[in-house]
Length: 418
Image (tube, rainbow, N blue to C red; front, side, top):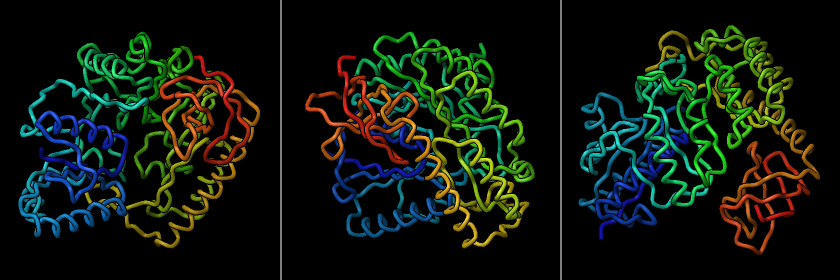
């Protein structure tokens, strides 16, 4: 029986799409291979949002080129954000790759699914569910709209049908995905929004939790905040990228909000959902970013105190507006210095936030075992480890926190009958 191997790098959307590609390969009679060397068919699901990611993809492509010389029958496919509309250029650049298809597409030679969703037969306790593809925002630094196209929402009944299937196969939590989930439904005939979808998913028996990402600050409105506040299964965790703490940099980034507007949104969220955990993204070293502007970002992070900060150094992407209009004038060493400074700051903030949980009871959805301990997440996304001799996979358990760190919590089980 032929074997396939999928190598994935990048965002949660890529991971979700790789899972679904695996289903299609199995339907065509393939079995998963443990390594690239054991595979008859290799799929690379690529990311080029940052230069380092693109370099890793290109290194993998070169490795496969060497492998194919010794195994000419090996089939290779490339998908993800490295694939653009100019396939002829890609074919000349990578002649050893047999197939190219755009991110979010499922090629006909794997079975044409049309608009139907692809059913995962072996889902995880927590499973990614894409609900909207593409992005209409065109932030000046971001290549995603050029590769994934304009926003296209999945029909509500299709999403509900997939989640019902996943719950039937053992999933207890779903994470709804989109480059901008706040835009969900805007392109559908009845204009359903994300809040409407969350209300309907909340009625699915057996589903314990719902999360969603990523939000855009300019699009997150009162209806969605109300859904987080009032819908039982929606978790108190919000991914809300700020990118910079300086208005001029935000304008150049084309983010369409000010620092003041962002702060007001955070205040509203915390007022209505006091236990909410906030995650944000920050880019350092954007073209022309001065030391004063960088310090404004650090000030924002120090005052807002996010639970998690994903920080990246600006990476020049040739298709984007920023690459065409602004000179990438911040030295790499300076970018690294700023990145390290924010990482150090956030470590201290996360340590402070998590320390407050010492002695507290939290509800944990158990996702698996690691190094002899069970692990899972609290409703607001804290990673918790604890010991138990019971099989608790997929269970909701009550845990008392006995030790904390910036990155995870240690607990002792109180109640496993939930």
